[in-house]
Length: 520
Image (tube, rainbow, N blue to C red; front, side, top):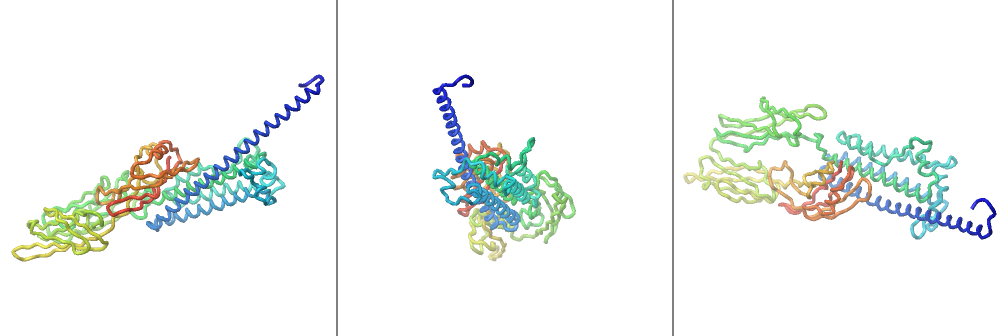
């Protein structure tokens, strides 16, 4: 079309070509601007899902405060700080969005800000926010935002600093979080110029919404880490208790006394030194088998200590117990120590040396009943907390003699929920994917074996590190197919929260604590 004389007809064709090209450019621009609006709408919904998930974690904190207030309080206080820091930052960014869309307050009518379809009226404007955010003549809100982003990130990460067991988690969150504002390398442009210079208003508002979600996601990571810190299995417990557990509290003269010395929550990777009555023993699988052969009747004391290596060096944990040796007295002992549990069949053995079990009569003095199973074996069923006595009467030569033994009646401990074999914490994606369902147990430390809770219902919240949260309702132990599919695709940083767990056990219906699993 260049060179030579151009006819009027050719001029018209050229003009129409230019007009058509301009119209096509406008159409592409409109589609791109609409795409920004759709992305922004999706991000707003994602932000609401993150808010809901964070609210669930805070609710779990509140439940844990009722069960273990002293242990939970330091983590809960930091969680509330995280909530406050994030809320202030999100509000600050929301105010910035308002200033941008209203031209710093000059536009007041809603219909002048957003059209009926929800899109911004001035979505293609690139000047109003540039003055506000990066112009040397303006208030330089972009530079201020950069500082607020980095300050908020540092403030959230600092909340984990008081808890040494969470140091690795704090580093991981710091490395992976998108909440950061850093000037790009290899260019003279600043972070704020990259975001706000020559960008249409629709893109800027979308970017600011993303920054809000980055803060909410970082808050979620911090809350999850703090919640897992309550039960971190790294020897940072409030108490480590040494237990001396005899098979029975009294033996006959000539009978061998046997007891187990155990350290609850022991570390299988440690070799613990155990000293009992001045003699050193070697612990195996967390247990020392102690035996004694008393040669006279009376009371005997067993005491000693277990050495445990922790963060602060080796520390001894002391224990002390007594047992009695008697001649011909009645022996009444619970097979599961001297505690009876409401709702369970508590096995009891009653024996009097030299006496026929058929000549022995036994009963409970208190709220409960005793069922004779024969051969000196009984089942005790109790109904109310407190102390009771088992009364034994033996008749010989027409004369009756009575013996009594006190027992404590307790409720069944609060059951624990697990995802398969996994407790709350960080686990590999392969291990998570292999878990078949949700289970309720009383834990390995409970004296009675085989006491199980049937899972009735629960809510699974899948929270990917990037993307929208997914909620799945489950019933029964087996995981729903959708949950199994999600677990097989989890990536590092993704989380599964199992909440609202309802189960039924021997003591009726119980609500179980949530399980929070993070993939690594």
